Image (cartoon, rainbow, N blue to C red; front, side, top):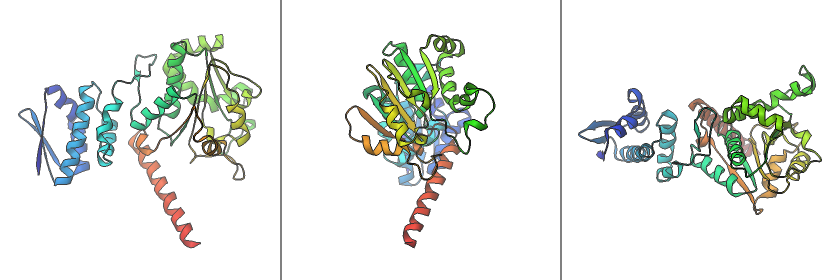
Length: 325
């Protein structure tokens, strides 16, 4: 079966095919089709169903290309996934939503529909809980939203915090004073802020008190007004810490809580404050709960494959346990 897609401008064809035709080769490989560019149109040949899916993916890529979006392996793989799940028509939702500009002039925007839903929730709700695996942009996009709100003078301060509990380590074993002990735990938050603001601007705001990066224990007994507060790695909070954090909110403030409930480093007998909060706060007005998945991973494709392999393994193990009962 052959289907044809009209191409209005040569630049579109160049963008769709990619450097050394890598984009179109990926589509050919994934859908088992052949794609050629002749006389101002793309011709797709293959089995009927494969051809139909490949055409849907190419049309979605054309939508992105027409909006000036650069097309690389990451975008092509994501569009292929959308075509397979029948969601390719939603690709237009991702065009044009720039959250903020980094210190190097790069626009930060949601790259997946899940990320778009997450960013919309942050803008709309007072509290947003973002749950998902590594690489889904939970922390980075939250920091981008915080910087955008700060630049727009919607808030006066950005507060970033994490529980100081990590895989098999405790603060007492680390060298140095308290600040140097907690810095490794807060490094991902520093990195995101440096990227958005640049080191010089970051240090200026830090000295003025407009930015605060501290372990969760420092939040006790405080009320945070006119602040954008981000709690990262929230799966490692106890139920008491989570309740303490949630009740720090003051007037004019916004909270984002991020975590991955598959990577809990708490002792087995302790309940994760994040898991409990998702159950307790579901349906509460002003609170948004967004679940991201492996399709929303925007790191190397191998991260996506690793997450899927672990999910499949745990699902198989769970089925075996249920059968053996």
